[in-house]
Amino acid sequence: MDLATLLGLVVGWASVALGALLKGGKPEYYVSVPAFLLVFGGTLGATVVSYSLKQVLDLPRVTLHAFLHRPVDIPGTMNRLIRFADRARREGLLSLESEIREGEDPFLAKGVRLVVDGTDSAVVREILETEVELMEERHRVGESIYSTMAGFSPTLGIIGTVISLINMMQQLDDPSKLGHMLAAAFIATLYGVALANLVFLPLANKLRARSQEEVLLRQVVTEGVLAIQAGENPRVIEEKLRAFLPPALRARVSREAASGTATASAPSPAVSPR
Image 1 (spheres, rainbow, N blue to C red):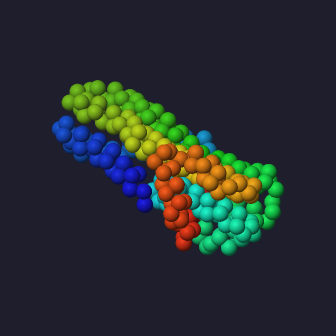
Image 2 (image 1 turned 30 degrees about the vertical axis):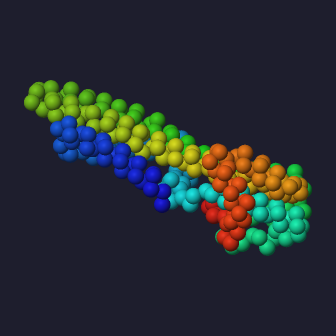
Image 3 (image 1 turned 120 degrees about the horizontal axis):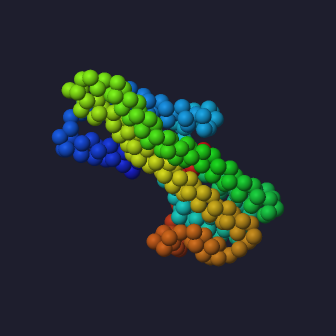
């Protein structure tokens, strides 16, 4: 469970609700089922028009990755690759077959098996980079859908407000109701803006961040596997891979590689394909 996503949503909505109440508002002032149906239903309908039905129906599964996500351990993966390089230099590439354990990251396992099978390095790079590109494209769809919904919902909120104002203009014969009707007219705009900025845009950004983490991990694996296949010195491979990390994490890789604690007894966490 990613507590940051859940906590962010709760804090965001709670802050808006608390601010409204502290301003003297009452909960019933801000509740309107018709306004919610218009904004959310209209946004959903416009989104279905923009994408295929399959992509929209797949959105709940994609959204789970914003809440349920196994951390990507890039330093741990680097250290496994460095250990692989050490063993390959001592015992040959075929010895790496036994390093692939149950629960291994499928992408890392695929790269190692391609190398062990003697696949040409250019073909290995093409296969792995193609898989990364296709993964990015799949991830981009979920991010794009939420970004699109964030664009539609404020507009649908304005449409809801305009509809309410039109209805209000038809009832000007009762001035005592004008204040209540005018306030109610803006609820749709409130819903549209709130959904865009407290739900849709944050989820789009979180999915983008998740994708960037997984792409970086796969880039590290690709370069590491190809360096092992080329027979490069493990220390050279370490320096190559450390370039992918910020300085603080580079120190961790160096310490673990030097001490030999580079998760030797456990496979690197598998990143579930999306």
